[in-house]
Amino acid sequence: MGEPPDLSSSLPAFVLAVVLISASPGPAMALILRRAALHGFSGAVPTVLGLEAGLYLWALLAAAGFAALVAASEVAFLVLRVAGADFLLYLGIKAWRSAWRSRETNGAVEEITVGEPRSGSALTWWRAFGEGSAVMLANPKAATFMIAFYPQFVPADRPLFATTAPPSPAS
Image 1 (cartoon, rainbow, N blue to C red):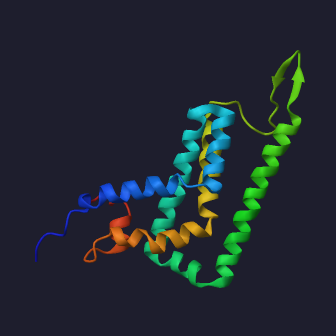
Image 2: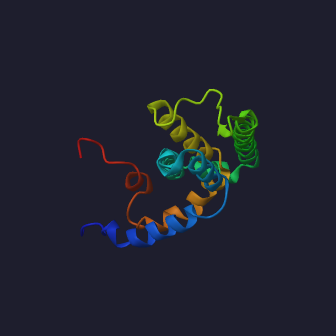
Image 3: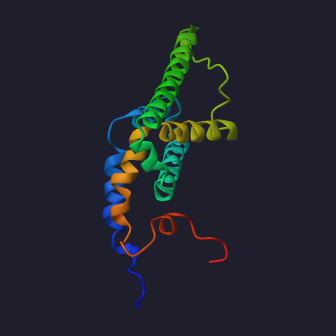
C-alpha cells in the first residue's frame, strides 16, 4: 500500500473554483455589499468569514450525508428555502427600517440603527459573522452545491468526511 495522494495538487483548482462561485450574485453577495456599504471593508470581513464558515459546515454536512438528504427530500428542501427566504426578508426589513430611521440633522445625515452596537465592537463583529453563517446555512443551493461540486476534489481513495473534517488534536 502506497501513501495516499497529496491533496495539494487539486488545491489550486479548488480555490479558483470557490473564488469564482463565491463572487457570483446571490444573497451572500448582497449581504457582503450591504455590510461593506454601511461599515466599509473591515465591516464586511466578518460577514465573509461567517459565509465561509457556513459553507464549511455544509461541506461537513455533505460529507456526513445530510446535504444529500436535503437535496433529495422535496419537503426538507422546501423548509430550508422558506427558512432562508424568511431570514433574508428579516435582513431586508431590518435594513429598510435602518434607512427609514436615518434622519437629516444640521445638514449632515446621521444614521440611527436600532439594536446595532457601535461599529468596531466585538458584538458587531460576531453579529456580522452570525448573519453570514445564517445566510449560508439557510441557502438550499449551498447544500446542492456541496453534493455536486465538493466531492470531486476529494481523491476517490480518501474518505470524504475524514478529508473534510479538521484533524483531531491527537493527530
